[in-house]
Image 1 (cartoon, rainbow, N blue to C red):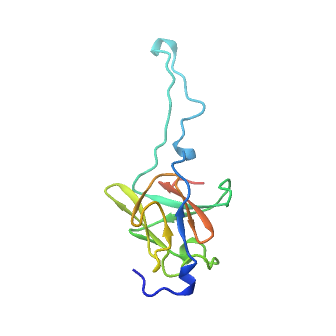
Image 2 (image 1 turned 180 degrees about the horizontal axis):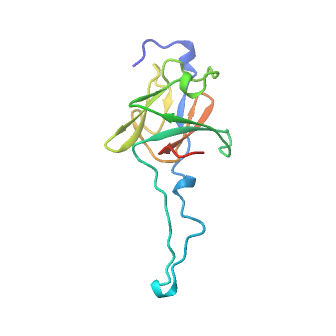
Image 3 (image 1 turned 60 degrees about the vertical axis):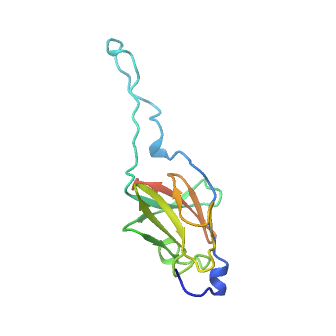
Length: 150
C-alpha cells in the first residue's frame, strides 16, 4: 500500500459503474452460414471467445459510446497509474490508483490509493467481467478480456 495520503490522492476515485455488457467479439455472428437441408437444415453460429488469460482497458467517452484508445495490460499484477492510463490527467494517481490481477482464472481490480478512494461494490478485490466500465479520476475505461482490436 502507498504511504501517507496527500491532498491530490484524496480527490481520486475508481468506480465500476457498469455491469456485464456484451462486447462486439462476444456476440453471435449476425449472418451465420447455413447448412444444406440434407445436413439437417440447421444454422451454424460462430462465436469468438476472448482469451481469458489476457486483458486490456479501452478508454471510452463519458457517454460510453465512443472507444478512444486501447491499453494492453502486460504482466501481473498490472499497476494502473497516470503514466499508463492518461499521462495528462492529474485526477489519476501517479503512484498507483488501482491494480488489476488474475487469480484462479478470474480478473480482479483492487484499490491502491492511500485513502481507499477506489469505490467499488465492496472494500477489497472485486472480480472483473468482460465489459465492466471503470471510472478512474475523471476518465472512463472498459475492461476487455483478450487482446482484440478496437
